[in-house]
Length: 435
Image 1 (cartoon, rainbow, N blue to C red):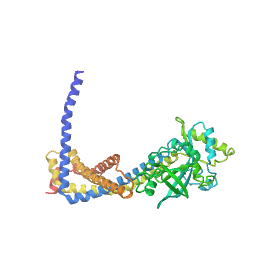
Image 2 (cartoon, rainbow, N blue to C red):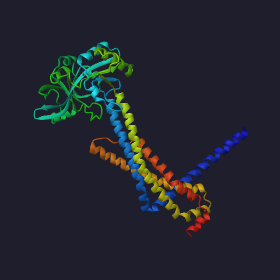
Image 3 (cartoon, rainbow, N blue to C red):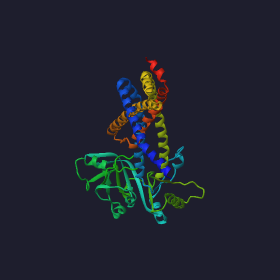
Image 4 (cartoon, helix red, strand yellow):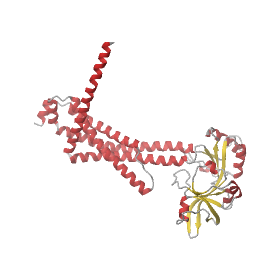
C-alpha cells in the first residue's frame, strides 16, 4: 500500500510539469504559425479565401435552413397541439395528392358540429368556421383588399390563443344572434385607419355589409403555414352566412380540441366513428371527410428539412473540399521553403512530434482565421437579408460552433500529410537541401 501511494504521488507530481511543457509547445507552435503567416501575407490571404468561401457557403445554407424551419414550425405550432380540424380537403402527405377523390366530398356543416358536441366524450371545445377569402374592406376613402373573413362560433376563442391590442371579444349572445360586429387584424386596421389611434366603434364595409369594429388583433407577422390574424376579419358565423353559401363553401371546417390527458389519436378515432355515423357511411366505405392535425405537417417537415440538410451539406462540402486542397497545397510549399529551418530545429534536438505539431498548428490557425472570416460574412449577410426581405435569418450558436469545428478539422486533415513529411525529414539532408 505505501508503494502504491508513492507511485500515485510521483505521477501527480509529474502532471503539472507535463502540462507546462504541453502549454509551452502550443504557445511556441502558435507563435511560429503567426510569424510564418505574417511573413507571406499575399499567400496567406489567397489561402484564406478558399476556407472563408467554403465556411460561408455551408454555414449560410445551414442558417437559412434552420431559420426557415424555425419559422415554419412556429407557424405550425399556432395550429395547436391538441386540435383536430374536420375538413373536406386533407392537408396532404407523401406521394401523389389524389385531389379527384376529394373533389366531390361534402363540406362540414354547422349542424354536424352541434351533433359532435352532443356525442363526443373526448372533445373539450368544438367550434365551427366558414371563410370568405379575397374580400375587400372599406372605410370612407380607404380600402384594403385580399383579406380573409372568418365566420365562427363562440367557442373559437377557447380553442385559439390570440391577443387583442384594443377592444374585446364577442359575447355569446352577440355570436348566436349574428350581430354585425367584427374583430380586425393589425394590417387591416393600419390600412383603413392610418391616422387614428383607436378604431373600435367605427363601421367598416365588407361585401356590401356594414360591420362595427369591436376589437383589433395583436400584430403577429406573416405566418408561413399557420394562421395569421394580421389580415383577417373575425365575425359571427350567422353573419357570414348572409354573404357566403356555407352549405357549399370548401373553406368550412370544424375545430375540435381534446380534453386534458386525451391523446390526439384517441380523439381522432372517436371523431371518425361519429362522423361516419352522421354521414351514414357503410362499413368498408372510404371516409368522405378529412381529420387534419399539426402532426401531419410536422412529419412532412421532418422529411423535408432532413433532405434540405443533406443537400446543404453536399453543396457546402464541395466548397470546403476546394478550400482544403488549397490549404494542403500551401502547406506543402511552406514545408519546402522551410526545409533548412526544420533541419536546424531537429539538429538542435526537436523531436518529430514537435515538428509535426508545429506545422499542424499553422494549418489549423490558418483555417480557423478563414472560418471566422466566413462566419462574419454569414452574420453580415443574414443581417442584410433580414432587413431587405423581412425574413429573419439568424446565425445560431450551434452553427458558429459547427463552423469553427469544421475549420479546425479541415486544418488537421489538410495539414497532416505536409506536417508528417516535415517531421520525417532527416536533419542532415534537410540542412544540405537548401545549403
